[in-house]
Image 1 (tube, helix red, strand yellow):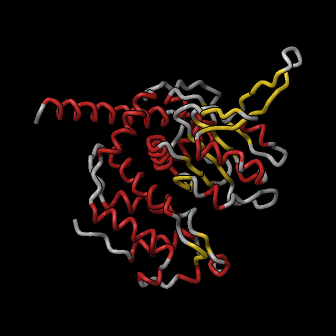
Image 2 (cartoon, one colour; image 1 turned 60 degrees about the vertical axis):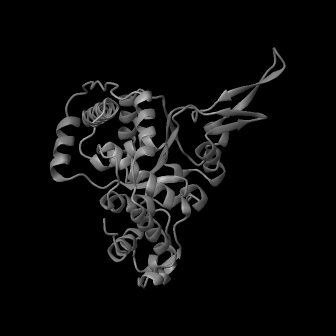
Length: 331
């Protein structure tokens, strides 16, 4: 092994220790939710956005806030409400009578991590204000195009229970999220620990910055060097194609899906699988990486038919059927 290889191995080990330290810092505040934290770390490395779904009180907002503190990144929270305006998100032009000029007043979207809390409570006009920011990493105010800080991630939450006073996200916007994560109730032991922590008099927990912006950049760069076998690449494409034409793969669910996943799903599943390998200290992707991440990448990209909704069939159930049917390549 050459000195260059040894240096790379040492650098990789050092970054893995920092990722573990990041999990521990978040764990000072958040009990459980290990998979949520891991997926958020993957999204950070991939520079991608995340949609988080769960009922109120499951620490979605607190998790995102704590993670940003442990990374030392600028954090901004936007509470979406029916009366919110696009300018409340992106900013606006303000007239200065003294100079006779319009000045750009940046909105809360100008941060590294933007928490769009209860994003489905604002109408489409406000939701679409995030589209340019999420896709182009820039905001247009008047005639001025302003780049957003790097890294830039939108982590949006929504409540799946309440339907009154909510506005479903359009498919074009939903497709821009790499993951849709479902946050479930904590286990008995985790909830017991939450009760013990939160029922005491208020105490300050110090969350230290353990992973720098430069570390994130290095982790992102490592994704390019992760090897993915051609057979595994074909497996990813087969999974996505099975959502569009399940009958071709012997899966009788055509009547349950209006349309399948877009090419963004193919790209994101491959990218996330590579990132999973990076955070686990590997330079190659395993089929288990693809299978573990497929539900989070696909669940918001399957448009369910009215027949599926009437029968109470979820996209997760269909994804499980696809994963069970499409053959894993030999490796």
